[in-house]
Length: 299
Image 1 (cartoon, helix red, strand yellow):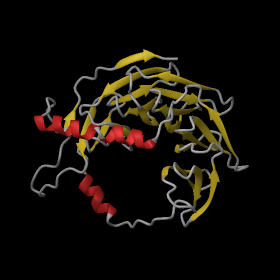
Image 2 (cartoon, helix red, strand yellow):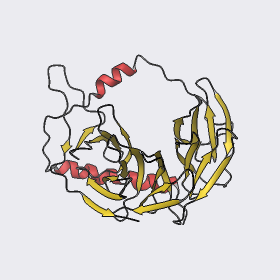
Image 3 (tube, helix red, strand yellow):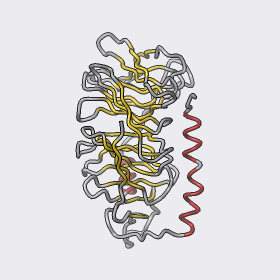
Image 4 (spheres, one colour):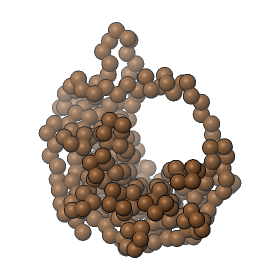
């Protein structure tokens, strides 16, 4: 069964109302004065910069989605509706490369260890590769039908790892052999979406419906999950300059953070309410207590 972005977005946004209702009733997790996410300071610095926009495609309604820097100094992005990979300089759109499979809905994209661009095809159910030497696109079918791959990243083991939104799995493709294997998450209907390599050498990912942050060890293939204090749909994730993992909670209108060592999760409103200079800065809306991870070996 084909998986569309409309379905995933609808499911994600539907969590917002329930999340807000729970917040209105009050949380059993009491805020403590820990890290402060100074969004106002970031916004002030942002005012010093300017935003320039470029047409994302030579044709309208291409729906640009994922973007990454290439090794050649160019920017490459996916066009989910245009079914293409675009190449952009810092001055203008240069060219586009059509994906062989029609209606594939390319989504996530990253630079691979082989120096090529690798991307997911959410509806096409494939992993694509744009060879930067030949400029040819090759595709590799995912064994699990209807897996709905979304985010993709290069792992510390030299493989490409990706989230399978529709199959509740984390997939891996060897860039040399092109072999693909995937591993089921402990939580059913978890809907993994974003994925990144953590500073601890593990792969970290979000679970949109599962309301958890997952971690998979690239050596043992064991998946461990950590529940977020607020149910609201985790979406994208990245490693911060402080060595923690930061993620978005689209349904709860928050930014979350998980410490890869202690596994403690803190959440911050996005943006926090403005406060007079004399008042104390904002604090996390919720902080998880002792983590209760669940683990399983998948394969």
